[in-house]
Image 1 (tube, rainbow, N blue to C red):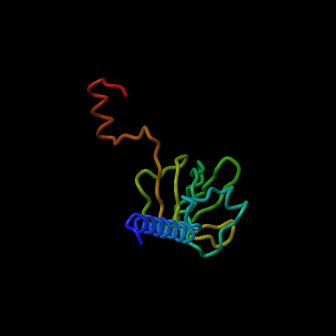
Image 2: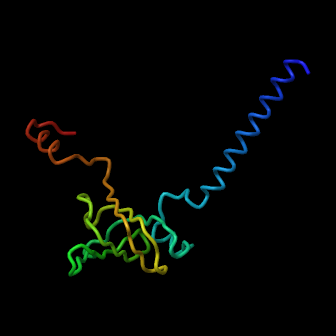
Image 3: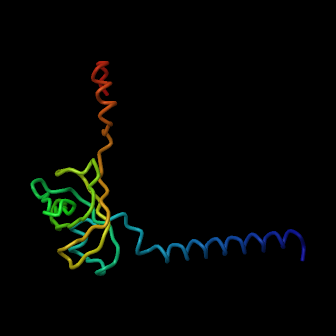
Length: 143
C-alpha cells in the first residue's frame, strides 16, 4: 500500500473513532443535558421520582417559612405559569431571597413535592458586592 493511501486510511479511522466517541458521550449524557427543570416543565413531563434533578425558578414572595428546628425551610419555586413547593434542610446562601432566582438540587417525592439537598441562589448580571457598591457610591461613579 502506498504511503498516501495509508495516510488516507489512518485519517478515516481517526474520524470514525472521534465520531463514535462523540456519539457515545452524547448518549450517556442525554438525560443530564438540561440545566434545570422549570415548574412548567415538571408538570408537562415529570422526571422519574427519586432521580436527582435541578428545579429552577423564582422564589415566590411571602412563601418562605422557617420551621421550628431552625435549619429547615419551606418555600415555593414558581415560573410564569406554575409553582412547586420545596423543602430544604440546611444553611441558605446569602443571596437567597424571596423574589429572586434559585436553583434547587434534589429529588421529587411526587410531582408536587420537591426535597432539596442543595440551594444555589442566582443573581442578575448587575450584582455587585456591597463593599464595591459602597466604594462607588462614595466616589460618585455610576455604572
